[in-house]
Image 1 (cartoon, helix red, strand yellow):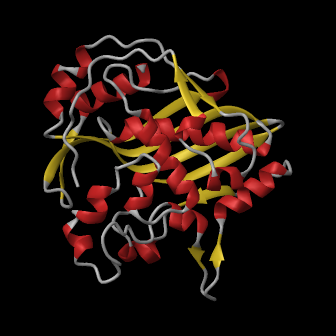
Image 2 (cartoon, rainbow, N blue to C red):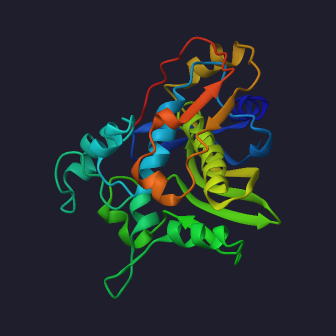
Image 3 (tube, one colour):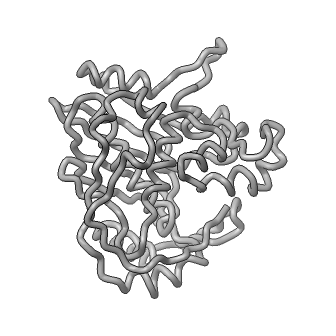
Length: 283
């Protein structure tokens, strides 16, 4: 919580106002922020200065790992975060590549599981790195990337957290995740949950101990209609101790994640929190 709150204070104290063309709003912005999570000690980075709905964040991560491209599929597993971008984004609604209601296009997990090759085939980045890590191999390129500039026009939103780079040292797996843009009051809450859970999951299915998760953010911002709530409400609250995340030990393979895993296979214990805060969401 300290590093999260310190980043919020830094944005408010040192940030610059930047116009955002997509949303039509201004953002108070800083460049370069680094978050670090000790996944091995299982200090789950769940926001405690307001109630955090962690299940939706993990459901979204599962959808990415399965390569979902439709908001309805995300809703079925407990995540509604793609409803607006799939169905209310004016530019996407007029895009000839959109295939109808709830279609997201070639974004996030689609790129991670079905990156198109020039010959018409696909690259499954996640399968490659899971196979390598399961054999104890780290070729310095165990990377899951959702960032495909050649297909930005074929999706409703460019990826914000775009690349996950795994590193194996002995029997301990580490993760470095890169994020180009971060809505700190809303998005970072989800993003840091996903970075932590991704390392814990991949370590479990590849037979390694989870180590450190390094979360690198380039553009960290607070929208102008979120500023008052952050400054005058959330930052005045005292944080609680971090909770812990337990993942069903029966999850042992990538196929398990693709088929039967649900939110019931994740449990958070020791979570104390303050009242929710309804931050505005910008489409």
